[in-house]
Image (cartoon, rainbow, N blue to C red; front, side, top):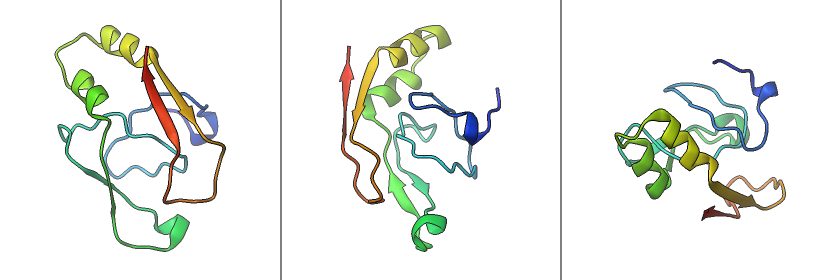
Length: 101
């Protein structure tokens, strides 16, 4: 299902494909690169043209790449509690925690 960025809500789980522009803050849960780095561009935010490496959350990535059914994967994702700090203009630091319930 395709949605616009205006339709995204805090807590939504989204699948982002290669070379997709996402004008929203996101936490990388998993990557089809099998746990390897993925890279983001932040030029429109900070003017920097170099790619920024990001790593998926190892435990979640392992689940998403497993042979479990989609429904089981979704139930696992729904059982994760994310706690984040208040919105912040600092692009280079993120304060948050993940709890596996």
